[in-house]
Image 1 (spheres, rainbow, N blue to C red):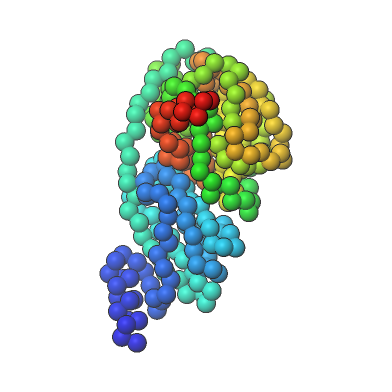
Image 2: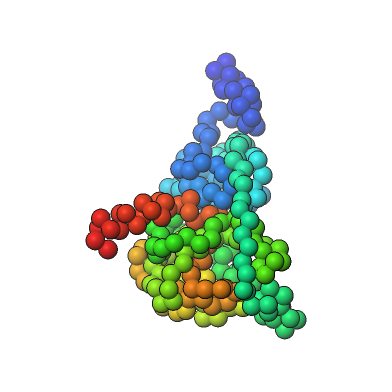
Length: 285
């Protein structure tokens, strides 16, 4: 009895809420808690997880994935519920990041200030992409080690505040890799195609891959989409070609990732580009 009481007091003293529970372990994850992070972890059998006021998908063997958006606050809270219905809320400090300012000139004026007809199209296409990212599948492709979809010069990074033709717009939520039109794009891990669109207003040729439990990759400004909706793909399989379609000033791949509506940073899941290029040279690619 005394040891159980001490355990509860410890949980309370460490910033964790407890309701007569000492047997629920603090969930551990494979990455640092920081803005833009993708966090993968595992619960004990039968436990449920709640985050951002939603129940988090959890596999039968307890695996889960979470995402922290660009402007995630300083504290994250995970609620774990065991098979008896008892729960503990664990808190985690979230590292706050500083983001760059990026000025992009020469963008077609129509894509900076769309006319009313364009706005109708934009709303329709936004609904399509949102629906693709809301899918909850039991896939666990997110457990694989991610690789770059292509190698090249990084021309834009996650989180930067964008100015188009001198006008402030939404932050950039992906990583840009500059390569010539037609350069092959490969799947970073396994997945299933949830959206394949040849020409969206802002993003041009657009492809969304579902990696399971709400985690998805989006590839923008493509000149060609080589796969179809519902098609399963394997890591390294060619899925598209680089282009300059949509709101773009030159050929590049814009690779974005989401955990549902949380926009996360793909670069936190892959090795530095210089390291990936060195490995490719060593392998003779």
